[in-house]
Length: 234
Image (cartoon, rainbow, N blue to C red):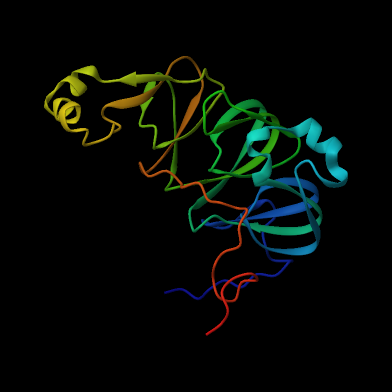
């Protein structure tokens, strides 16, 4: 087992991965962060809620998703931010005058040069413009070209292509397992029965597992000893 790497403010990378599970943001101004994804920081940094504080002009120009506003903050100041999400794989991506739709639970942070909008597909948001964003995935991300059909649970997002259609394998549904489900109600749709179908030009992002990242409540205090508001020490 290799020795652990010890970082300080000078040795942390700038806008790059510290390791496969943590990303270091060089903050010199503002970034949008999903609550609960910052694990540590150096420097003079404040965190303002969406719709509150002195950054309303920035929010008005870059954040257009009222359903997700309570889950996001603006990091403002100078320093280095370490981002992570439950030891999932973390990667950064660059959009250049692009259009990318991503599962909302996978998106950790983005530069305010990008504009975030609410997707018409439930559970997804869309980033438009030029800039960097950071996202998590359950395993390595693969980039594939349409036309393709994707298991909905493996789908991370898609760039510069039309929104997907639902595709159902009716032969599979009409077969033995479909009949069992109809009679008993046992079983749910798998990726072999139901897929998202992509057509046209663009890129589809698929993670290496069919287990989605669970949505995590970010508004409550963790009920753990040693955390303010948690249970008392024994």
